Image (cartoon, rainbow, N blue to C red; front, side, top):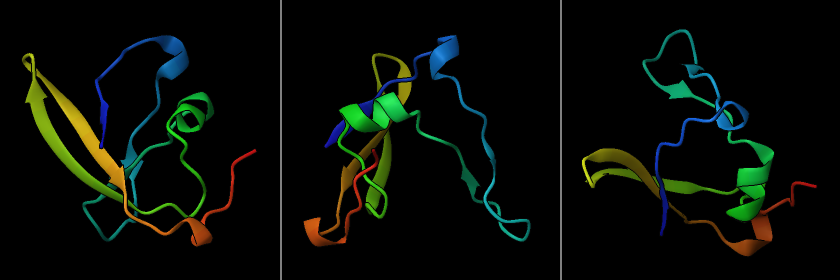
Length: 74
């Protein structure tokens, strides 16, 4: 399980946009240096949740896919 606290620094900021015009889902980009530290790769499947830790909302996710489907981001 990986916990991502909300960190606001200019180099880590991304914009949230609508995933598709006909849905209410949203998407954002995970900065490359953060994706690398979290060992995220193209094709990874993520299971998401949220929790309040020390008074702040945090996104919690875990990878749910098999190793064979991943493409390294390099």
